[in-house]
Figure: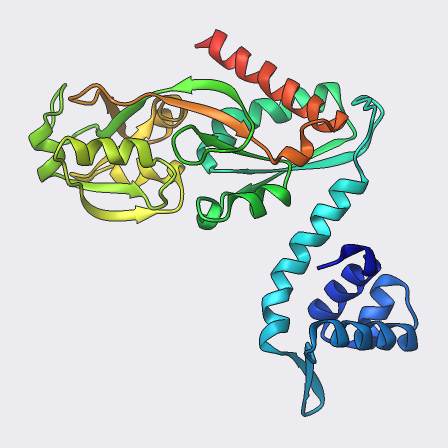
Length: 303
């Protein structure tokens, strides 16, 4: 593919056409007349050798290739937008910008709230948008990182991208306050026989792998897409849950649960901010990383 022969403005037109599925509305969205947008569609059809939009009755539907390009075009648009918004200098007190971070609800509760507080005080024009970490992050890390400003995730899940360490945490277990079978301690036999409630994604993979290495196969009764729901699903039951100690401290006051130490030396958790190399030398992103490191340092000192 010879990029020098392509008009990058077609990326803008392609995204509008695929999302609107209407030539007139797509033109209005990007400020082009209907004839100009029709001409752009014709050029795109020639390039891809595909109709992209196929008329069905009185409306257009995406072809199979058009459906594939829908998500890829959105990602490409985000990358181009970030590329051309890069700055040599950045004044957080005067700038207006949004940073998008992928994170689990655990990372937002423990770290993101404090980051948002610091940003509010020091950079009133800066906005933070936290989005749920997507399951495909392990398989398609480069694509996801290229379309966002960073990913909050512990070490041991992804690799090969720049990262800065933020803070450490450790794993503990939650049990109901009135659990009939668990006193002050858990045994490995308890972990094998008692029902579990788990975070359903694989981002705590090092901790899960450790259980397998110990010969413990959790008997999962409930799985959820939120670490913060774990205490509520433990309360009043015989279930147990593996959870981060920092989050447990935040949540135990609002649920009838208690913290019990693991009956083994649990692998530690080190939370990090990961980013795509395209952001490494961007002044705004450098400020974001330095602020995140400072907030992480405060968390470490407070603990």
